[in-house]
Image (cartoon, helix red, strand yellow):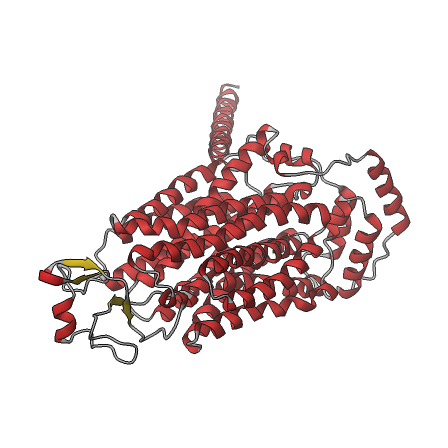
Amino acid sequence: MGDVDNDLEELMSRLGDFGKYQAWQFSLHVISALTAGMHMMTLVTVAAVPDHRCAIPGVDADNFTAHWNSSEVLDSIPRSELGALDSCRIYGANGTTTDCDSWVYDTTYYRSSRGMEWNFVCSRRWMGALAQSAYMIGVFTGAVTLGSLADTHGRKKIFYTSSVLQTILGVSVALTPEYFSFLVLRFLYGVFGSAGAYITGFVLSMEIVGPSKRTVCGIAFQAVFAVGIMLVAGWGAVIKDRMWLQIVYGLHGALLMGHWWLIDESPRWLWAQGRTKEALAIIQKGLRMNGNDANVDVARYVSRGKARESSRDERAYGISDLFKTPNLRKKSVNVCLNWFANSIAYYGLSLGTGSLKGNPFLMLFLFSLVELPSYVVTVLLMDRTGRRSLISTTMILGGLCCVTASYIPQTDYRSVVVTISMLGKAFIASSFAIIYNYSAELFPTVLRNTALGVGSMCARLSGAMTPLIMLLDSLDPRVPAVVFGCLALVSGFLALYLPETLNQPMPQSLDDGEKFGVGDTCFASCVRSRSAKDRGVYEVALQDSDYKEIDKDTDRA
């Protein structure tokens, strides 16, 4: 699977898989997942579009709105075949229907929102979709730019810069009074709110914990991300003013403000940069916290580090290195598609909770809560089944749930649709969690943050497309879910061509990354397993026949 730096692995093994030091650092890193989940889904409540109907001239006014089932309303607004009021048209002169230009909103759950202020309805639905897409495009941009910067300038610097800026932007976006300024701030909010701190925090954790704990820590990041979404629902149910609601969301970034003095730079990154002495200082600090009194021969490691440094390639690694060599290129394309499909299905199901009947805060909360048992099962299975088979299975099952739920009438079988959709969310949440761990293990240290950044970039590209794809429900309500489901099915199958990383050392150099997993696919493993089994049966049969021949010879004698 490629060579690894034996000196570094020896030191990291002394540190242990998960002692007090790793637990302390992980508890600091994982807060970035909480804020990322919250920032990602704020628009679901801050820009919510509740049930609405056309405002009737002469009947509805600022201080009075007619009851939805009053005779004035029923006589002025056309109804669908199922008896629901048309939300975009009103009767005009001579009984003709015309598009309305003002609306009345159901305030049962929402008193104010950007969607109600700026009327993200009917021919203006694109404005709400574009606002969510602007955030995802920001995450897309941050994933690729900040991911590369973290590989060249260090994880800690990018983590903290993003932490400060996400707090400032999270509050600023609540105060802007104009739509296009709002879009610009949403874009910048996405760059730093759900990309910089979250991705670098994840990588920092993956690079200090041992192989046996990477699964648990990686999945814990996704679980805390889901808790962040649950907080979106919780605060949305309590705070009814959209401005103060967004300010509260934004201020959660302050939880990361003290991290510059609390978290350490990744010793793996420092080692890969030739900064051996700094890496050793952090490892020694970790050993002391973990109660390990082992003596580290600093002079020996530093001298050997200088020898490596003199022969080390000084060039900086970037995105292009993921695609230059055949094996890395195949893995990169496959992983990118996996990120893309996971994200579009995950956010399609998350953003689609608003279209389900019932309390929108409860629906958003439940669709996030269902992820937690999914993560527990994933943790229990990942180190038994491996990454490859589990991610493929969960994606295929999640895709089937998406497609199935879209063909069941919600009016007649609401509970069935909700149940299948929640199952789909659980499966996709599981596969989305696995791809974070899987990506970190597939790529070498010199490209790890870049690879995660590119993967996250693909996820955010599909995330940016998700609100726009959901507008296709005007053609047929089933189209968005079918698109999401089919992408998950295709990517789930292609994941079988990725190498297994379970119990394998993490590659360090670019050469390690290219050698890692050559020829290892699910199908090749099955063939090898079958060949070994057949060979075993043949050898047993041969041994039995030999014994029979020996017995015959003995009898003749």
